[in-house]
Image (cartoon, rainbow over all chains, first blue to last red; front, side, top):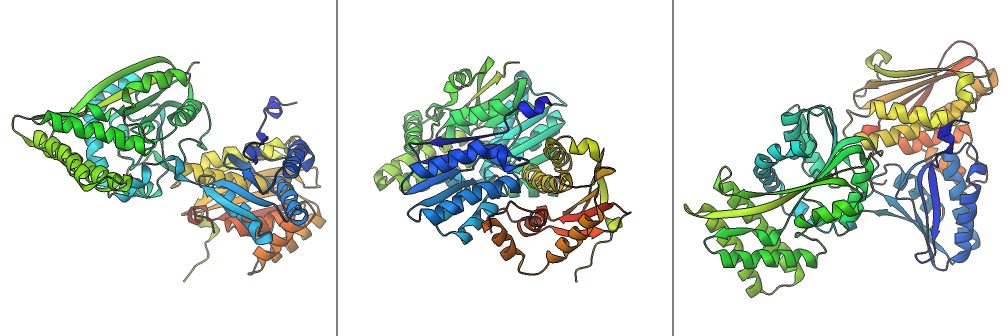
Length: 392
Length: 172
């Protein structure tokens, strides 16, 4: 027997508490006999539930027609014998074929509905996508790159490596990395189709090759395990309400001996002179505001703990301060203006803050801009960089 | 005006050749070959991971069709070529005269607006999906264009054009 035969290719389980039957992995049997235990489990699940049975296929990467027909058959039969029961099939927007294929079942049985799991784990994404944020993201990357290009080699970056940039946003970091370090391959993944469209158009306009922009969910990626020498994930754990899920995936796709590199902020440590008190008050409020939306923009110094708990070794942590002295102070001021627009103009309003609160909140950003543009002023935005090695 | 592509417009990308006896010795070859081909040809597509996932689905189904051949001798060849946004899979494998006739009839049915309904009927039916249904599903779910190409006796060549780049990301 080939050892490949022994590797479990898929997994089926039933969660009583959530009335959820889930199947994941690659399901390509030669005959339905191979599926007997899973089909029995599905039938038993159906027998046990009342109301709704959730069928979770978010991590079902492949399923051949033999298996699809077998599982569909059980569900369709149950619809006919148990009209009181509803089936909700949860697919992922990332796995191209599942929603389309399972969606057809609704046409056969109205009690079967298909829901595409999407960006509910990304509370910050809508703010950033809706805010016309792209020019600011570019400016931010330009400002942080001055520091990161020197820092990255200490965290595993070198020519010829195979790397992934997860939560790549508009893809500008991947472009800068490619120009500076010439990795052999970059896979850049994000959960925003509009950002990826932008990234692809930039790559096409500038004839940039070698970067594969791909749509995906950072917490459940289709990428195969153990394949990247370096996995970067910048400014993203902090806007994810369950960062440990992303880290688990970053760990999975990193090859043993490779490194995972993350950057995050501690927003309450943004600073400036003059008008330090007002600035500090506002950024303390920024941290509270993000917490309200289940994001932790204070995550930076917690990176070490997160990496250790995710199973990494040889943890390296350092920090740098982006300041108004890095290049054009107006760039710094433009970034703060964009923050003010999104945080005070959108998020605080959505939280239900009163106008006086918002006015004071805005003032701190204005004072930060004042400090950035003042001939004798100083304005800073601190970033924490951390990386860990996946044990061999 | 849409002009049909000439075969010469498709640039070859990769080809896997195998003795059919070896191929038939292990079912998992279908999965392994389709996954390998998908990975190899998807790097420069607009979304490499998505393309690879979809391509692998199609290639696997085709290889599973070939696996069910009743002709025990000869060669299996799976060739992938590309023209612009369309990928072409050419799958050549040995088959009996009856099977060749079966495929001829099956592919002649995969035309017209009723393909979706016929596929739906097959899903709601009791029988496991036949090779005809598998090919029908490729046309319905992946907008594949399938045809047979004449080959020497005892072999068959399925030519499948896949516009995966233009397959909508959102559910239909």
